[in-house]
Amino acid sequence: MLTLEKRPQPSKFWTYMTPLVAVIVTMIAGGMLFAALGKNPFTAIGTIFWEPLFGEFSFYYRPQLLVKGGPLILIAIGLSLGFRAGIWNIGAEGQYIIGAICGAAVGLAFYPAESWIIFPLMVIAGALGGLLWAMIPALLKVRFGTNEILVSLMLVYVAEQLLASMSLGLLKNPEGFGFPGSRNFQQYASGHNAELITGSGMHWGVVAAFIAVIFAYILLNRHILGFHIRLTGQAPRAARFAGVNPKLLVVFCLGASGALAGLAGLFEVSGPSGQISIDFNSGYGFTAIIVAFLGRLHPVGILLAGLLMALTYIGGEIAQSNLGLPAAAIQVFQGMLLFFLLAIDMLTNYRIKLTNRRVA
Image 1 (cartoon, one colour):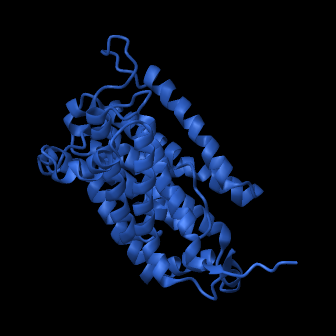
Image 2: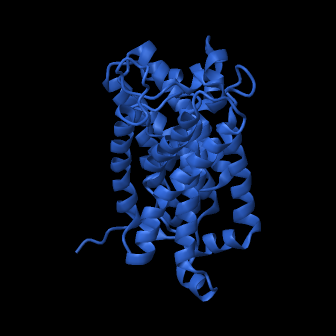
């Protein structure tokens, strides 16, 4: 019979192989799902992973990798800091929404004035909005010992209601003929997060994501705070003996992840999305959790995982259009990736052993 035997120490081989194996197994399981829906599995998988990069219209889809990947990477970097320390922020989606609302509110407050200072103020407001929203579970955990998973997750639904309220109320476009939603920032030069190089998909949100990757790498590998984060996640008891203040660590990790999620929301609402609307949030905050773990909570790994997940977003949209696949099937396919990643990750700490079953 097959049994699990705990390894003396985690396997370095499986630490790096788990994401690759999880992607392959997801392709196989996804192919079976698409076949059950009556679609050619090879065509479906090829459409998702090949068409955006090398297909007939790849010149249009390739820049979208940066557009979709930017917010995923930015949010996942923030989440990974907390995850490494055993601090679980599951509410990045809410922080993303609040950051977008705060940043958009600042921009619209200046409308129709034109000034170079408006967009930087929007960026600051977006980061502060996400940070303050993340401080709610942080301070409740520090003061009352509440569970940050439940509090941060429940606050997502509060943020969604605030988003709907703002779309129909304070931020509603007065010239929008009664339709919900704010003014379009793509028509407001001072508040527009435009492409830095036309046709490249590169905007300030993508730049911020790359900067976040660099700073996170330096923090985790060259700074005492990064050492405290890693030590707390690996050996909490040793961290206390080393003088780590767990309350300050909770505030820092949740605050940093909230600020980065808020920035992602601001860059999205002022750029690709263009406006505050009822359906503004697209699940980036939840998908970023998959990105963080697929990247092994390592900044460089998250960068690659974010681009891979962006590829499934774009390829999934192509598959829906060209093959008639339902959106739910694409979401299940993306969810499979996290499921198989966590399942196969078991091999990092355990080995499968074949033993003889004794007969009484």
